Length: 111
Image: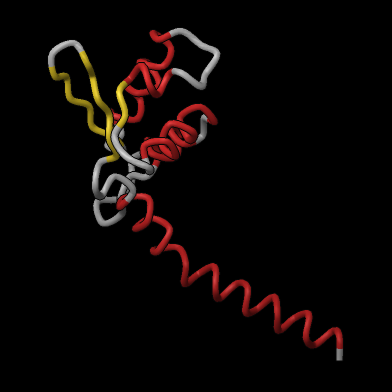
């Protein structure tokens, strides 16, 4: 089911961040750009597997990659999390209303 036109599609970002390896890659890139080989170092997996994770992150707009000579460098994309932030912000008022109702209900029972 596609998101309505006035709502961002956060699904691809949520899918990408649902994997622990990809979250660790995003955390590492939060400290600055890194080469693919530098990103792969802490993981016990093939370079091909890391590249597949990077492709998922790039496809959903969280990172960009650039190849200069033989080195491919990755960095976080400014605004990559905007769709997710907007999706959360659009739901926040309803969450607050529900929490307020719950607090009222529990407040009445405690009295």
